Length: 149
Image 1 (cartoon, rainbow, N blue to C red):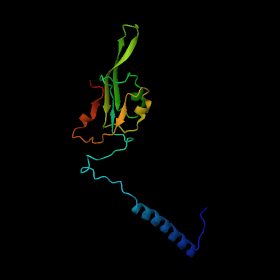
Image 2 (cartoon, helix red, strand yellow; image 1 turned 135 degrees about the vertical axis):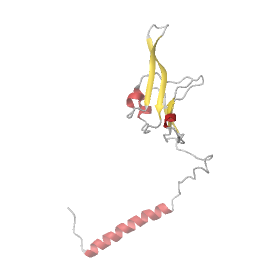
Image 3 (cartoon, rainbow, N blue to C red; image 1 turned 90 degrees about the horizontal axis):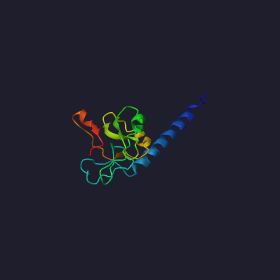
Image 4 (tube, rainbow, N blue to C red; image 1 turned 45 degrees about the vertical axis):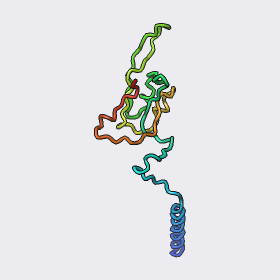
């Protein structure tokens, strides 16, 4: 239930809340600014390592990636930004079939950078880079194949 204040009590309460707001504004006025002059300082720009810019598939020295085509990242993606094409190959040594990644397509235009795919990947085969310049003239160029050799 809302308490009733007298005219003078309401006036004092209003002044108190005004001073609280002015205190916060004054404190922020003297803090160091974090605005970046982007195009001019492109060479010295420091981006947080937690920034989610573009999905990448890191490779080792030989050019191989860690993806085993399990499809967990595809299932975790809430808006179907990832499409995996795989095939079963017979391993001659063991005689068992093994899934092999054929194509890993990523639609940057549909991605909402939620990182659910990276969290679902048990092998660390995909990660987000800090690349943020993703402007293009044609949306079809936003669909990328990540497992290029």
